[in-house]
Amino acid sequence: MKKILYLALIVSISTFLFSSMVLSKDAEVVLKAGLIDPPSHIDTLAIKRVADIVSEKTNGKVKIEVYPASQLGFATDLLQGMQLGTIEMFVGAVTWLGAFETDYWIPGTLYLFDNQQECREIHNGPYFDKLAETMRKKHGIRVLTQDWDRGARNFIATKPIKNIADLDGLKIRVPEQKSWIENFKMAGANPTPIALAETFTGLQQGIVSATEQASHWLFFNKYHTVADNLTLTNHNYEETGVFISERVYNSLDPEIQKIITETVKEVTEWHNIMLEAEIKAAEEKMNKEGVNIIEVNQVKWRSHFRSIIPELAKKVGYSEDLLKHIMEYWD
Image (tube, rainbow, N blue to C red; front, side, top):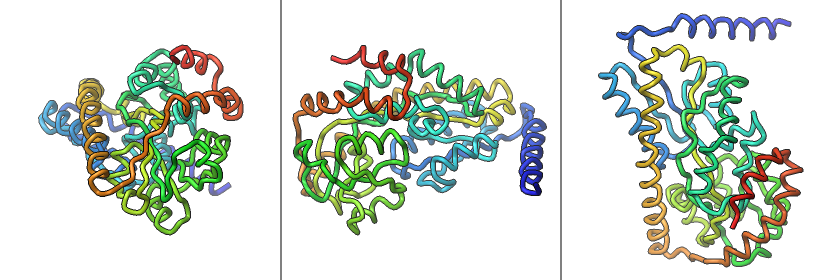
């Protein structure tokens, strides 16, 4: 009972603070943006660019402080903090919202999209717009954008992955998301949820023998120094979202709301162009450093994994309408 009263008191205080924080035009606004990505990641650089532009547009009245590498907590911590209004912003993969709305997990399905452009287009469409509105109304998290590309994901491993059969029994690090776990189980692998901060050590100590991410992410985290086999499968495409606490957003002056929202959208094209350049540069650097780069028959891999998507969708619980909508894009 005491615990319930204590939590109620915290919520009441938080509500009072934010309701009384309707900012005058002269008030300084400080917003903390958390990421789990490293400082050199394009998402980190992009939100810093947003911060600079917003500061300029508001004559320094709005300051967005950027905290990469899980300094403010892991993704789930940041999302929960936004609900309470104790964390202002989070920048990360939209699949993290699957903890609240299952359909947000669907981009974590292997070979769901043909390419990044298709993935982005669907995220900008009516189905994901509806999901975003549900997040705002039901969960108190506003989606400012969900179309910052994350790049094609590939495998990096201590042993070469050349064929689909090489996934059998493979101890692979995956995010703590049901879509990833179930997908790799159905592929015959042994998915192991490990925090990002522990992935390098996990590869180094043999807790896992593989992980997967976009090539620039693999390079920046130096996974290639302990697992020197990169397999270019392009097995997944996702989008990054920029999220803000609805409580915090509503406490802002309308002009500030407009500036932040517009600026996040303005930076999208720059972000996506830079991402392509980063991925190309990362793969070239890994090649020069002696990484074994393996290419596979992606058509064959895509066909194999798409054959299990309907079963996976039932197991995870995706909406049939959303899955059918995405399948209409398939070649």
